[in-house]
Length: 85
Image 1 (cartoon, helix red, strand yellow):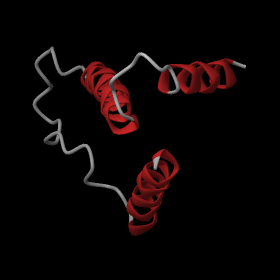
Image 2 (cartoon, rainbow, N blue to C red):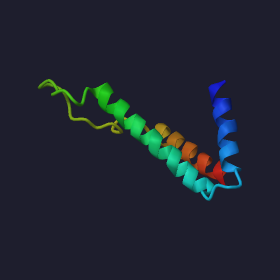
Image 3 (cartoon, rainbow, N blue to C red):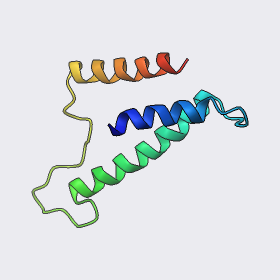
C-alpha cells in the first residue's frame, strides 16, 4: 500500500550515507508539510475565505476536544517521538 511505500522510502532517505540531516530534522520537515496541508484543509472546510453568516459562532478548532481526545493526541505524538529515537 501507499503507507508501506512511504515507510520504506523514508527509511531509505534516513539511512542514506551522503545526507547530513538527522532523524529529528526529517521529522520536523515532514511535520511542517503536514501542518501546512491540515491548516489549508481546516480553512477550506470552514470556508474561512468567505465572510461567515451572521449567526455563525467564532472559530475555535480545538474547543470541543474531550479529555480522551487530548490524551490520545498526546500519546500518539509521544509514541511517534519515541519511535524516531
